[in-house]
Length: 110
Length: 406
Image 1 (cartoon, each protein chain N blue to C red):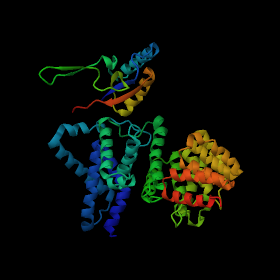
Image 2: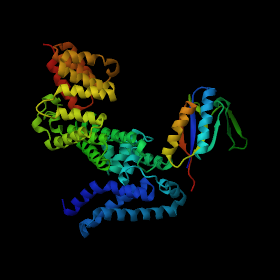
Image 3: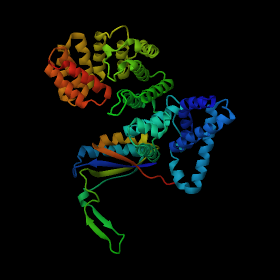
């Protein structure tokens, strides 16, 4: 079972060097436990482009698809047997990155 | 009631949670378990009156529900194999065994999982563990059947999609998780005991009764947990006073004025026995045990021993320094040391409790005792404006009339 973990933030590029070090350490722990799938930081949503390619010509729009005060500043994809395992891990992840996190299940395909 | 009906009612009360729990484990899906259990009870209602009550009703129901679940999965398998497979989540995993292993306990912890909203926890617990029908739960919480149905469906879908596990938590998480389960049960009880809303009966026995039944089940499953014993004792000692709590005129009767002859002595004896058991354990009491002990003092002898009550509130404050605990302590101090002492403590809570009816009701009663009629009336007005329980509003209104300066 995989979970997408969004890092909730409201200020651009607000991460500190200490947080980055704590995240590295946490990521090592994820890898050791076999929970690591992927992780990345994201640029501010203002750098986003929305593309609609369903018509004849793709239509481009500047900015994120939804304007919110809070946005995902980064994400993890983790492997965990169930939500309790995922939540226990990401409670530590939240401490490491010093942000609130959204833990969202990835659809399981049979 | 015929024998078959009686047997069915008893089986529903005693076996529903077990049937759902066993099936949820076997099929790894709460929805399947719930539907199959409901179908099995419907089958019992059809067969038992004609064919007689089976010698082991619980086993009959589980076997029947099991067959219904397999039928349902076959039907769905033909229709949408992929969807059905996606729904079968947690059963496929090897399950680490918790400290106590009972299918019903797994069910309780899953329904009260902290990742679900509080409303969803309450609704799921009443449906899956309590066996209440969706319209009954909807009525209990004054919402539409469809709203309650959707709430339960959403919760079941989240459990499946997010893979909320079906298991008893590990020993190190157990106290925290039990405390979450108790909070759900207490919420159900209080919604019954302090029912709110202008068209609502002041006490709703269907909810208090169900909460007590669930607390008894939890006590059976976790016999060594002090807070579970405390919760059951607290509910019993509170519910024991139910008949004396609302007058024939529909007014709330405050504890010191209640007719103790109307109290339920069997419930009081049971509650006291639980409190004594906890005292004898020598373990430090938790919040619910202290609240139970306070209620044990209230129901002991001919009148409350306010010195003991204050001492217990002092102990409770060390665990739970919430403004409401401080308010209840202040009221007890008002009884022990006089109205002036009580009022000083109550007044200090205004910044936290200005929007809470019980704060104004407590102030009003203390001001009235001190003979400050105008202040008392104003405080009663504010309490009446904020109160939601019909019996309490009736009581406060009469008190305000008595307080009015001539």
